[in-house]
Amino acid sequence: MSYWNAASRRTERALAALLLYLLGAGPLTAQEAETNLFGSLQAIFFTQKSRITLNTPLPDGTTTLTEERNSFAIQQLDIFLQRQIDDNFSAFVDMEYQLNYSSEHRWGSMSLQEAWLQYSHSDAFNVKLGLLYPAFNHLNEIKNRLALLPYIFRPGVYERLLSNLYRSEDYIPEHAFVQLSGAVPSGDFFWDWAVYVGNAEDSYISRTDADGNIRQDMDRKFEFLSGVDPTNADLKLIGGRTGFRSRTEHFKVGLSFTHDYDNLRDTTRYPMFFTRPRAEFRGDARRMRLGADLSGSVGGVRFEGEFINVFYDYDLADQAGFDMNLTFAHGMLGYWFTDKLFTYGSAEFGTGTFDKGWSHSSLSFGASYLLNSAISAKAQFIVHEQRHDEDEDRAMLKFVFLGLSVLL
Amino acid sequence: MNIGRKIVHRAMLAALLLCAPLALRAQMVVITHASVPVKSISVRELLDVYTLNQSRWDDGTRITVVDVKSGKGRDAFFEYIGMSPEEMQRIWLRKQFTGKARPPRSVGSEEDVVDLVAATEGAIGYVNERALKSGKSVRIIARFK
Figure (cartoon, rainbow over the protein chains, first blue to last red):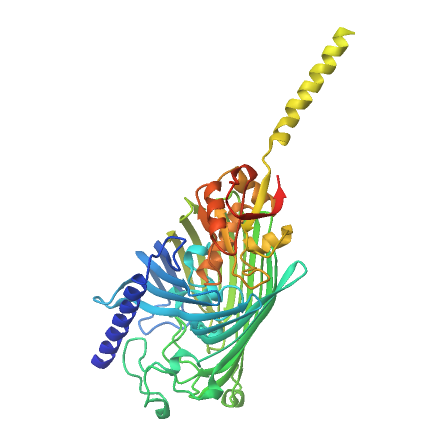
């Protein structure tokens, strides 16, 4: 444990040193400066009421569990640095702090989400190198820019507060390392394209479980390296997105695709309430994600929709008759009542994660009001339900979120 | 007869008064740095430039987009390219926060726009024609009201 704590501290110090270096790199806010510092902060208060109904009684005979919780939190703070190095090269850094981050108290987290260098040959051809959010559907590239989103609680697979429920990487490619992309004008539209490669999912790197304990269930061949992805080339992520976007940015549609491998040795995450073990397969499962996105605005109406289907090709599961495929769908319909007030309703549905019969759905209503050019007041009401069809267990959660989003 | 003339005169006066705001509406111009290799620009091209979808001129020079913080000229410009200022702000923020583009340089007055465009290679801005100063080397590439 002490080794990992020391490594964690070294990482934090390196990030802090990088921040100090970049802060000292030159004037940061004036338009004349070549380096810009900006950010996104979201502070929230939420109240949660949960009710779990179990068809099979617990040992003490309980069939219904309830819980009520209220909390304040700095949900997320992202600090961005952007530097236009010359006409062709630019660099970008995103450092993220979550949930009242404190290394002293060991809660929350601090992470480097993006750090890349871009070579821009033209608007039709750009190359990004480094840690980056790859193009996948509509939300993946802006998933942690909370001050730009109307939501407090993002669609499930993008919401870090649900990390106990979803493994986001099972549904979306969280990071890549090389991306080629561009936008080519075509009539009233741009044709957007992007292709990228990256590591296999993060769990191949991690040697610790969610509680910080060293995991004992890993494949030995992966244990001689730490801190880097030890997998060979055929397990890596490849993916891309293609789509059309109107020149007014009022309409956007696209298809996304990835191919990589899922580390089934990582058994640290289960569905939140129904703690059945995940599928008992310990290996590298070939995985393909397919995504479709549609978003746009007509007058004051705004709509967004995403669909994700994850297909697995894994002989052991096939032989056992186990369906590992995952589905996630999300839709939002909103209306700008004024230039400042946006209201919306959204719905989502998903199946997985590796627990046959388990599914979940959410309904959400919310509003966002621009207090000024930098501050938004937000409110959101969510009803989230999880079901297990085989034994008819149910969990119902109701959330009320109040929040303030600030552009820094 | 006199009554008839008076009615006609009053009607003409009323028509003049009604038309005056249109006639007095400022002539706006889109300007670039003198070295920019463009003689005219269409509304669609302006839209691409101000939505930050076009980042370079034909000779490869990077475009520096200049915007004025507020004013009737700003409203007229966004109306001309068919966007609302709020929509544009959201587009700029999204591009800035994803590292795809830098937002326009925003200055406080039209005089500042002229100064910045004249001093910055590849720059483009919009101003009331009256704000143009002699001795400032800018090129007019579009006119609108």
